[in-house]
Image 1 (cartoon, rainbow, N blue to C red):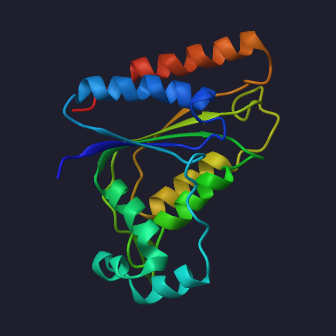
Image 2: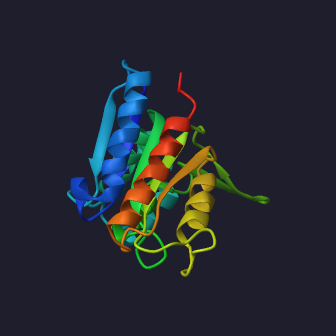
Length: 206
């Protein structure tokens, strides 16, 4: 099966979001480096994943393999999303910071892909990821500043994403930050310039 670039956009503003626009530039760079690699693009605001429910929780414990899960209605969305991730050579995730952490649609996607027995396993030494690692680029847009000397707000987003993606086996993370977007046009221009510099400095994917 052909490997893909999997792109997940999480902003309620969809393609108009600063994070999505920068992800366009990043995805184009990756696509030019890997012209034979198709892009699978999910805009979560347009098709939000379902929140997990009691049916999901019960089925997860007894239908852990992909084959078993395919037969259970409660796990079908989870299987589709996990297979997309398994087939991705590169993951691009664009998201705003909402209330110091991830937006609800991203949390819903995470809850569908972080599944006991399928994408991680519990051991006496803790959780062990079952998915292969891959380069993962995370574009984050924030109205304020949450890094450096200008930071005036907590940051529960990047530590959470590091921890939860590590749980399923993904540790090769690269954060590209757009901060201070609510501070006026000059701040937006500065944020975009700094983020674009990061993208240009990224080593090529081969």
